[in-house]
Length: 152
Image (cartoon, rainbow, N blue to C red; front, top):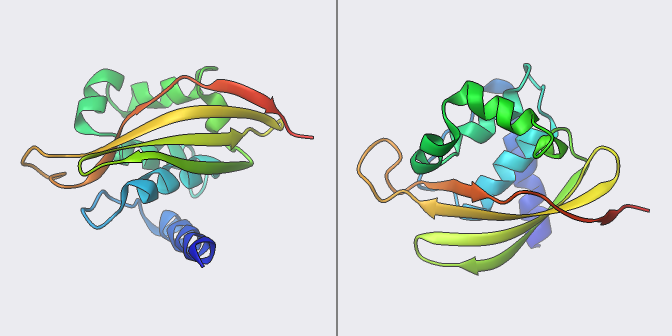
């Protein structure tokens, strides 16, 4: 039942990606933030060049944006060999590690376009400061990729 729910969400998010960017909202759960980001990166150039990276940026926590710089820097960072395996990846799996009131930790397994598997530690936090993102879950950090194996 849970799997059907996530598939439905992914389909809905895919349609929304074609129409407009999904914006952070307090109703979006931590795991859904990661799903939105991963699905966007999976179809990066739809509906326009680097739309997936831009969608991912929408959910970068304000504190993370200070570290990564503006969108143009973020695009360069994702296209850098350190993170480029995320672009147009084949599949992903999100494993909850620890979910708390204001921060949640996940392990993401990702298979790149060449069939290589990587793992990432993904951290999302609820924005507690007043402002446009108040009470929204947003990504504060993604680890460097950890090679896991090659798909058979």
